[in-house]
Amino acid sequence: MNVIEINQLTKYYGKHRGIENVSFSVEEGEIFGFIGPNGAGKSTTIRALLSLIHPTSGSATIFGKDCIKYGNEIRRDIGYLPSEVFYYEHMKVREVLNYSASFYDNVDYTRIQSLAEVMDLDLNKRIDDLSYGNKKKVGIIQGLLHEPRLIILDEPTGGLDPLMQQKFFELIRMENQKGATVLFSSHILSEVQKLCSRVAIIKDGTIVRVENIRDMQKHNYKKFTLDYRGVIDVHHFNLEGVTNLTVDESTLHFLFKGDINRMVERLQGQNLINLLVEEPSLEEIFMHYYQKEDQP
Amino acid sequence: MNVFKKEMKANIKSLIIWCCAQVFIIFAGMMKYQGFADSQVDVNALFAAFPEEIMVVFGIGSVDITKVAGFYSVFFLYFMLLAAIHAVMFGAVVVSKEERDHCADFIYTKPVRRFQVISPKLLAGVINILIFNMVTFAASVFFIAQHNDGDGLIDKVSLTMLALFILQLFFLALGALFGSLLKNTKQATAAASGLVMGFFILSVAVDLYDKLSFLKIFTPFKYFEGATLMINDQLSFNSAAILLIVSLVFFGLTFVAFNRRDLST
Image (tube, rainbow over all chains, first blue to last red):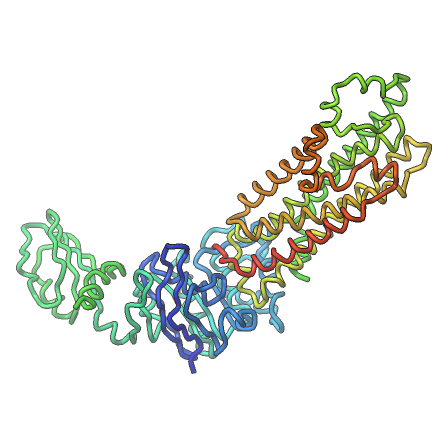
């Protein structure tokens, strides 16, 4: 069964494009990634799903019900974490969470305490005294408090330190194992790859494609930066899978896709000061993969 | 209920400040009355020497302000102005504050329809203006009694407060409509307070120039007159009916407009 079904969803803000003909569906029980650069339309899509904004055309259903028409019923079972977390600043964390819980029936209030412990959050602090990361934690707890069947996360990891990200991912996996479906929007490919089974890629307001994460991993680009002690032998890296090769004084940059062992072999014997292997940004991947493949 | 409680709590401080200001105005105003009464000067003759324009702007028309009811009736203009600003601001802010504070995503993703959020907010508004009205009433009766041998003129003041409450309702609805139609709180409060000033200037202009009297239906400040209420004990039924109906329409439009609104983050 599909928990979310989006059908030709379009949103224009006046003449300004938000999203155009976005369609995809999310199956029950999966963690679905929604990935695209900033400004591509991820938040617009999500905000339309939550009926915070009204689509210009097209439709979307959640749990088989129309998002706008039955928004209030649907939202009973949705936990949402916005990308920018803001709350009533003069309230205490506990007050905000109690207030949030008061909108749902049958909320287990002891969950506030237990979730706060997992996320290491002080419930007695005032919202305006919290750091950005701690506000995000309030958002996470607020989103998971009522044990929603669908969890919608809009760029959830920004502001969380790596340890917290890890805990957060565990929390999401746990909720998922208990049966929750997850829609996870991000502009960081690696975190989506870690968590998700399928992913929709959005760019300039339209869906570029929907893929299995396994297929995507075939396109697993790594970004290499090599600092040379001596002269750079550019031709040494003239092998299959290397793209975007640039030389910048004594530094060599390139993207590599393929068997990592071949690259490790190739690196032997090179006289380096430093070597950096990174996850390329989504923009870089778009430039070297999606753009090329989508052009006829 | 939760939204209502939260809104009452959020506004309690500002309500107390407004009420204190109002009590002080009534207290200080009635002190002046004592000054007039004690001075043995023919105040009416004194004011008769003033240019009419000035008297109109200060709301001192043709009433006998050496009598306590007449003196108090002059206050009505200031009550209207203060109460209008209080109510219109409340209305404009209460429906748009979540967007201003960037927490619209919080409350409008809860399993409630938008009217279920807006209604308790507006109810909190009605209770707030009612409290403001009751405090005005209590302070008025108390301070009038001090200067009127213990007679607080409860009947006359009650009628005046009823008129004031109808005006407050109208301005609350007007503010809410602005809040739901305009892009953000800033625009809504600016437009709303601008309109209140516009209404006020129009009401003064109508008093100054007889030729403009046909314009008085366009300013709520001319719907009730302090003197009519305090001296003749009359509240215009037509004025009350029109204001109440318009208020209801504005409240209705607020719901419609807010429901269609694209909420900003």
